[in-house]
Image (cartoon, rainbow, N blue to C red; front, side):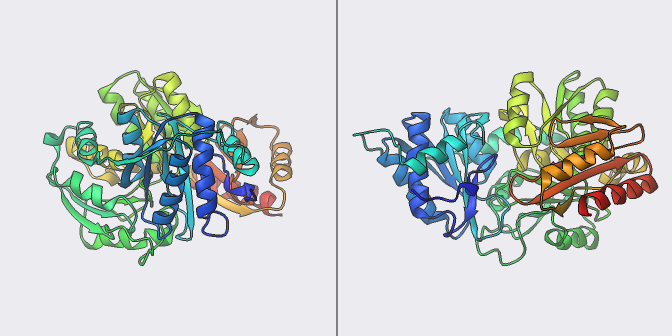
Length: 446
């Protein structure tokens, strides 16, 4: 079968509908999934995209024609899907393209929680099976049943915090017409907080803004509303609900590495001495705050497939990525958008402080560039050039090129999906951060 190999990515399958990924390809991927994993039952959920129903129908037909039964969990957020795979102890396929624009579709695939299919671990195998149409022979035909696990999900996430400790905080949540709105409302109905929702209804036409809160234009309204409404905090979620972002009481966007440091330190109060995993791009704030309170910080490659595997291997309590993925041991090492929102509410309630009060000490000490993307013709050559230019620093290759000096450090990685390199840089003064950032960007973009 002719298929664009570029849709088979490092952590999932993703492409534009219907040019890169259509019903015929979805059907073949369903058959390939059963052929590769040799399973007889598969959980399938989907997000709110306009192409969702037909892609769902095609992939489930492929699964059933290949002999597997389908457990249809309906239109859900990705953390609800991970929960279903954990509860039912089954592999799964989630029809979603996460935070990508509305014309995309795709699949996030679970082998067995917390292990997902990734580029090296299954996704390229699916590609080969689809291209060669090398499906296992079968005479069995699968069937479909429906299963709603939303009540169990709500109960499970609420058990991760002390609801009785919550104060009547004023929260504004923007779910961007993605998948989080309905389940968030139901979870927050159990809390004594004042919730104002923005765009809580799933709508695949995305009438209001895009699905990635890392893009400033997609969170601008939320930032304004937190200030104008006098809210304690603002929460933003990506399209499928596995990423989470915070706007503080000043209307300022909070960097993901600051959130990892603050949540990691807070969770260590409950389980002292635990391991906390963070990604190579993160601020020094993360390992320093974790170590200060007796935790064990562990650096890992970027990407949920690597983070989940490392957490499981180390029995880590918590992990965070700078892009807003937060993972929890008590949630089978999976990432969730809803759970960190609950932990922030508990943390603010118990400490009796504003979000900005927690951030000010970090902002005074750690100066971070945020992730800066540059389009380059030859990413490997550019990385080599940077490595040579900064060879007097400590150079590491866990993921891309990381270089560390006493007062500053940076990581440069090639994008898995686009002809981009991504720079994250930090220094101990704002002046040096800006100077070093411009210096490294000049080399990248020359």
